[in-house]
Every structure is written in structure tokens, then in C-alpha cells.
Amino acid sequence: MRLKSDFTTITLALIPVAIVINIVVGNIVQVVLKLPIYLDSIGTVLVAVLAGPLAGAVTGALSNIIWGILFSNPTIMPFAITAFCIGLVAGWLAGRGILKNILATIVGGLLTGAVAAIVSAPIAAYIFGGITGSGTDWLVAFFQATGANILQAATLQGLISDPLDKTISFLVVWIILRGMSQRYLSHFPRANNVIRS
Amino acid sequence: MLIGFSARWPHLPVALFVFLILPLAVWGQLLRELGRTTLAVIFPFALSITLVQGFFYPGATHVIFSLGPFALKEEGLLFAYGTLGKILLLAGAGLLLLFSTHPADLILALVQHGFPNALAYIVVTAIQLLPHMQAKAMAIVNAQRARGLETETNLWRRSRALLALVGPLVFSALVDVHERALALEARAFSAPCSKTSLKELHDTREEALARWAIIVLSIAFIAWQIGGL
Image (cartoon, rainbow over all chains, first blue to last red):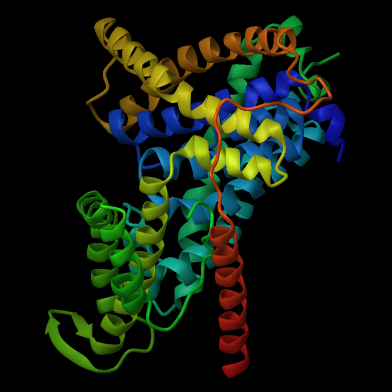
């Protein structure tokens, strides 16, 4: 980890904006467009790509905590652990150069989604009994009816919804990064992750 | 009490909610607010968990009544009750902290106990930025609707509307980032000296003692639980 060189002033300026992007985009997707995905980690992935895994992880974890504070809903705070891991994985993958190529970006989204599903399943299973209070709960019911236990059902539910969600997030980030000028991107500590030389 | 809260999962979370959280809420004159929000948070969980686990809990045998191929089972309902108790305690305790303590005070307390200053900046900025960004987001939604973007049709069209809404929002937010960084530098944000604060905390010795007592108690309880299993 390059702690000092990743957490520059521009990273610190970026993180709160990314947190708010997570929350506002997550809100638009669920409230305005009513799509069956969350899309609440675009900011996390963006920071992870531009400023390294640890900065991405901090962004993800703080997003969930602040979301819980501002919308008076402490039940999403335990999933800060998931968001932390999403940031780490996305940052590590970006360091491997996956955002220079659209196919690699899709693969990276699928991988991150699988990790997210595996991390959040125990949280959902042990704290919430496998339930998230949202539309994907019927999937949990379906898997339990076919004989899975709660942890298995929660994992399977995650493995269906998370990779799709994270792949779309990665693609949105890819499109956004294509749209930024190279001069602008070069201000960030891990600009080499995205600039094609 | 400011930050004296540690999570724990005892056998009787409902009892803890009734005999610890509620009296604290009455003491802090927050009962109405707390009650209303807790109910709002809990309700979707209650509905969903009773249905899912009541009917589909793995290995349940005691059928209470049947509805076609589905059957409501006793074990499932007991499990749903236990889990709901946990969520109730989590939501109640979390909301009690939120309603009794202004986020800025909490962050200041954390920074004074050794967390990095940057953390305070990030959290406070994000909290202040959110209303602006939400207003901007709604402006973008309305602007794109005015240009004929369909946000209330079938799934495929709504999916395609995503980029038209998210794109402008993220781009405009990112353009601000560089300016913010320059502004921070101009105000010596990364200067290696200690900072003073506008706000002051009153943290008495009794409160600090109570915090330590709660932490020790919780660890002892968890150890006892693990040892007892």
C-alpha cells in the first residue's frame, strides 16, 4: 500500500464527492428509475481506480455509514464491510490495468460482484436472517424452498444480483473515465491506471 | 454519553431494547422520534422475514397452517422473531446515537481520540454536500425529462435513461473536485501542525468511565457466550 502517495489533497477532495455520488446515484436508480439493481458503488470504484485500493475501501465504508446517518437507517451500516472490500478489489484490479480495455472492465465487474456477494452473505445471514427488506428477498425464499440453508441462500442471491450490479457500475465508471480529459485525470495519484500511453 | 456504544448480540435483544434503549430515549426526550423512525426502518424487514422464513425456513417441521403448497411453520416464525429482535436492537441503538448526538460532535470526538483529521473533513464535507447534489440530481432528472427522456416506461427504456442521468451528475461533480483540492491547499489543509477546533466537547470523567465499563462488560459477555456454547 502506498499510503502517503495515495492520500494526496486531491484524493481527500475526491472522496467526499464520491461518497455523495454513491448515495445520490443509488437513490436515482432506486427512486426515479426503479431499476432492480443498487448501483451504489460507482463513487467507490471511481476512487479505487484513481487513488488506489485503500482510498476506495475508505470511500465505500464511509458511504454506507454516512448513508445510514443521513437517512436514519442504521441497518445498512453493517454492509460497510462489503463496500470496504469492493473498494479493495476494484483498486487491486485497476492496478492490473483492467480499465484500459472494455472486456477486462466487464470481467473485473463480475469478479468484484462475486467478492461482494461472498462478503455480504454472512452479514445478511447472521444479522438479518438472510433478508434485506428489498425486492431480492423472493430469491432467498426461492433458494430456501429448494433446500438451501440460510447462508447458502443468501450467497446464491448475492451471486445472482451482485455481479450484474457491479458490472454495470464498472461500465459506467469506464464511460466516465473515457469522458474525462487526460490532463484532468493526471492530477490523481493512480492516473496510470487509466491513461493509455 | 457520546461514543460509548459497542455492538453485542445477547440472547434477548428485545428485552434489551425495551429495558435499555427505550428508557434512555425517554431520558433524552427522543421517544416519539425514535419510535417512529424505528418502526419505519423495521417494517419492511418484519414483513419480508416473516413471510420468507415463516414459510421457507430450512428443516422446519411443525406446520401451523397450510396455504396450497406452502405451509407456515413454527421454527421459521421463532427464527424470524429472534432475528427481528436483533434488527430492532441494532436499529434502536443506532438511531438513539444518531438522534442524541450531532454527527459533527461525534466526528470531533473521534478525531480527538486519535483518528486522522482527514476523516473529519471527509465526513463533514459529504454530509454538507449531499443536499446540493440531490438538488442538482433532481434538476438533471427534470431537464432530461423536458428533453423527452422517458423515466416511467418499461425496464429496457429506463435502463437506457441511466447514463443520461448519471453522466451529467458525475461529470459536474468531478469538475468541482480539482477546485476543492486547490482551495484546501490554499488553506494549509495538509500543513503538519495541530489544528484547533471551533466546537468544544464536554466529556466528563464519569462518561469516560462508563464507556470503559460498557466495553469491558460487552467483551466479558461475548467471552461468556462463546465459552458457554
